[in-house]
Image 1: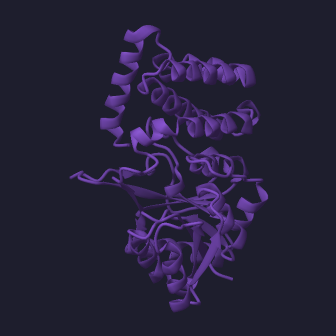
Image 2: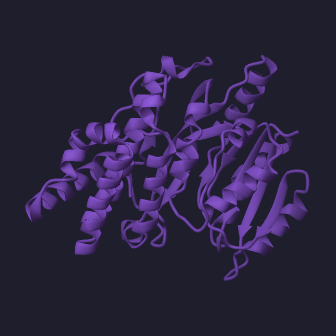
Image 3: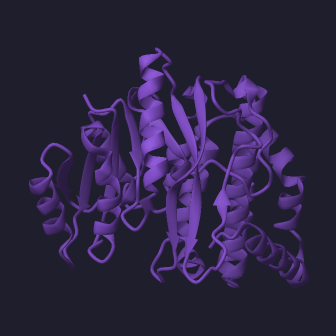
Length: 339
């Protein structure tokens, strides 16, 4: 059995996937790399995946499937994983070598000591094209270092500081048993990948290393604002699935409940601002419908989120109110470096 399985979802990824794969190969015999070719037809993705599997048979596996989208590729990787732990690395991203070794050494040490953690968190770096300063998402202010901890020991994550797919490594068995399902042909399911398992995570470990390098800069990238607006219905689908997933008042640990509330708040904010920035009457109606859905489905959560600063900002009336919402969004962009 391997220590860590890393799944790489690939769809027409020829221009950049080899950089990703090569960054993971130094994991050696401790790591299983599963390249999931998600029905690529326009380039050499399938051929490259097979070539690496042939060249590194003890490390790399190539799995080919009909196109099902990012979420289905992640689920395929999870289904075939043999590692004790599971990580997703997107095909246009890569990892830092020194941090990689420290992560593997730490996981190995935790197992040797009988520490059965459910989730490891590490930092990630926004590798934004053209940016002189690379923003690092760190968690040292919120998570204790150097020992296994529970949610009750967690501090406060500040505004704009969230646990993303890039941050997490999950225990494979927990991830399989928690009932995780990612819908097919839907973008932005990485939010569900992080959000759904959280109440099933009992033991955590934080390693303050800049491990994951998250590339931002391709025009067709899912987090590009124009692309997000064009795919806003998929964002709304994910948002509604997260609303449906848990009645947060039932989450016992108050720190975890507070964090999941904040996570849902940022999802509502992102959906709302994309709908506002589309500048169409139809999408403004969809924004109102989203908040109405939250009110109907989770009335107690609606009352809290609607009256927080972001809920109020996203629902200011009239053209002037929407302009203020957009200004607030652009300020947040500069402060936190997303998109």
